[in-house]
Amino acid sequence: MKQQTPKALGRKIKINEIDIVRAVAIIAVVLIHSTPEAAMYSWQGTVVPDEGSLSQIIMFTLNRLSQFAVPMFILISGLVLFYRYSGNWTFKTAVQFYYKRLWSVVIPYLIWSFIYYIYNPWLAGVPMNLSAGDFLEKIKWADTGYHLYFMIIIFQFYLLFPLLMTLVRYKWFRVSMLPLGLVIQLGFYSYHHWFAEVEHTASLAPTYFAYFLAGGFLGLYYDTFRSKIKSFTAAASALMLLTGGANIAMFLLNRYQGQMFENTWYVVTMLVYAISTAVVLLGAGNVLLKRLPRIAGWLLPLGAYSFGIYLVHPVILSAFKHKISAPGNILSYNIYVLASFLTALIGSLIAAFIYRKAAQSIKRSKPKSAAGGRVTAGG
Image (tube, rainbow, N blue to C red; front, side, top):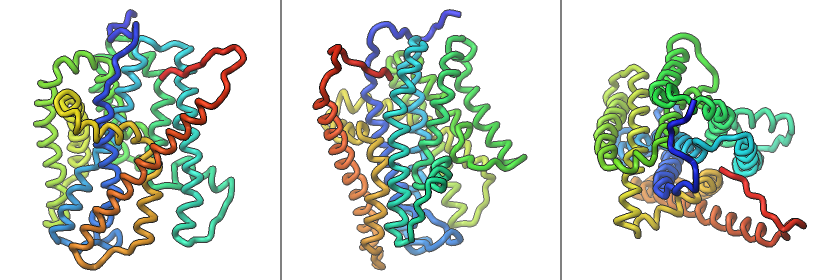
């Protein structure tokens, strides 16, 4: 069957606004990890600052509203992959796809898993138990770092991608991507929630299938989306405000008023909130690049280096919190949280920048092959 999706003949236009979306998402990731004490419930551990204080309410709200970060990164991954490979998926590109992911994603995951395997016990003053068997057991579910579970999710989507690229040739699959993603994700949630508990749900692809296929659908028809971006953004903004507001309202009412809500309401509102926020940010990114390039210029580096920031920031954040004790005064504590956030974000950005420049310098210094050719990995 002939594919009706956008043609891949010639070079596809780079989606520059993607880096604006990545920038906001990585800021949200660092914000989540900078405010866990305020988001913690009393039964989970020590709550800081005081329960019910204005500072805690603000930090708790920011922490919860930032939970779109991982779903958004998954959605953006789907968008980029389907946009890049639709109409151009062959055995050769499949080999290039996995070769590139091996070196750009799998190897960094293994390296950083080992770094955190050593770093976290060392920082906590816990005796290290260096064991190949223990390390291999931990990397199955990214247990060496609290943030690395995202890598396990994305690996699963990489494994499924050839199947999805085969299905996307058929019109029935393309037009049903959004409902199909919802059925898979909500069906998996329903089975886990009401019938039989499934282990490691936070690290399993079905938990995020709607996000990935929503991104894939946007990627297939991004030219159409871009041409009507104002109308899409307006509708998505209304959904974002409605569902984001409902989601945080339930959390606030539950925590501070003791009102109970069935967990499904949290899941559904977050699902719509995350997808609509991604659409809003794509539209906002498009506007910033055209009308406010200076502001876009501040965000683009964060997006371009978001993967490096994601990998590095817990090193800096953990060291900051370990070496600098949280002050008791509420004003000082607010400054402390802000300082930890900025230190982790800017410090990891600088580290990622230095690493990339060093890697590029080493790559340029390597002699060319005898044939004088150059091999590039697509994707």
